[in-house]
Image (cartoon, rainbow, N blue to C red; front, side):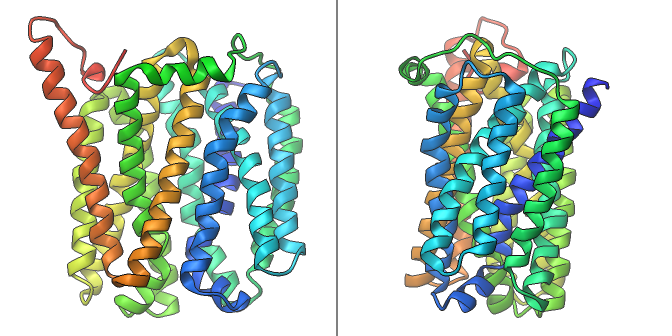
Length: 398
């Protein structure tokens, strides 16, 4: 089997992980009503997942550094399937939180390993596109998983969603076992040495871009369903269509982001995507009574936000190519911390300000990320004005 097909298989696995993670935002109001909790409390299911993912993933990746990559991928997926089974079978909010913790640990292993394998088996010069393809699995979960999850939650029990993920996860384990070859990881690196990478100001700045970009996204996306239902006045049928449109735009954005990274460079791809991201969120905060503008802004938001993912992932891989797995692990942790921070701040905004506030507050977070990129780029150009710098190195590079 060619490397291209293997990368697409990894994308299918990321689809399952993405569906399980992101579907919560699409059915947040249903979970809150069914478990007799507030929207803010239900939103913390995302926060808990992200915090555990952020701190647990680097530790697990370090402890399993000597494992064969296929074995690690299958083990992580098995843990993930088990957690979804717990959500389906166990009653009550506290047990749901426990299952989300287990789910986050399995998901972290799966995502980092899938990205590492995809980057290593991709042809030279196509690593950005390979990473984009794996990330495409997450975007596909927005296109298929979240809208279908919403429909299931409206007409049936929302727990059926997680039962379906269990069945698909078991099938994925069989396919991975049969198709992904044994792949040894790079030389094991102790966790202390992994964290030593953070001594580089360039890497810290690049990770800060990930944090503020994703925090702004998460702050808004966590409450997208109640926002569209209560603030814009959408009905259930229109909401399902809006979530589908959001997902389609994310798929296009992810693929174009990978193409743009290879074709135009990291810096241009990131800046253009994030500027459009801010514009879209601001439009959503002020044009709430215009269905056409709301739909257009949703698609622009999704397209622009997901176009930044492949560029940022590839940028971090090139920062320390000899430690690509470590960089992807650290970035995944930072991104999940950002998701947790965004969901938490969004909960505060909903409780103390309004649902409408989550959009313009999210725009502020993305604007901070843009500011970091611009300030560093100007500083680097001033310092190295007499040295040729490749386009892909204009954002913090080692």
